[in-house]
Amino acid sequence: MQDLIPGIIYAFSALFIILDPLLSVPIFAAMTKGQTSAEIHKQAFIAVAVAGGLMYIFLIFNTTIFNILGLKMPAFQIAGGFLLFLLGIQEALGIEIGHVKDHVKSAAGVVIGTPLLCGPGTITTVMLLSKDYGLLIPFIAITLALLATWLVLYFADTIQRVLGAVVTDIMGKVLGMLVAAIAVQIIASGVLAYIKIM
Image (cartoon, rainbow, N blue to C red):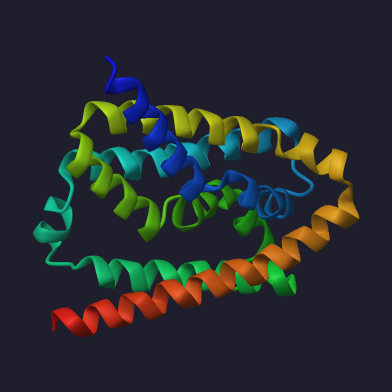
């Protein structure tokens, strides 16, 4: 029990930081702008469900999924980086890429769920935690981190109202650029890792 609590606290902190739901608030608010509270809450649930599903799958099956598909983590990292880059550009420039506006809004939860919340960094973190702590501690930590993330996204419209539309819009564009920059770094790391394993 003495080892359980510190382990959960550490794993939760690591996962919450890597999930970084506060980063997603302006982007999530922008993507669900004009929707009803019920629809926003639904998209928040979808985002957390998508992220959580992937996290639990990789916690339990670890690298087995990649091995079955014949994939390497760097390939997943590069693909996730490209998707994240497109999302960042879309938010920074206020443009729609590849979808009409209504489709993007309806898919907000999925896009936020992955690759923004649960991308290569999150999956890698989950796999490392499972290696260090086994299944129980990361499972509890993932559940707590997802609950905290859901609460942040659930109240995204409230946070947006408190901050104001102008501030939220500016934050969305700035964070869009940061997301694009993070994506470039993820892609570069993936390419270097892929070259090493070839």
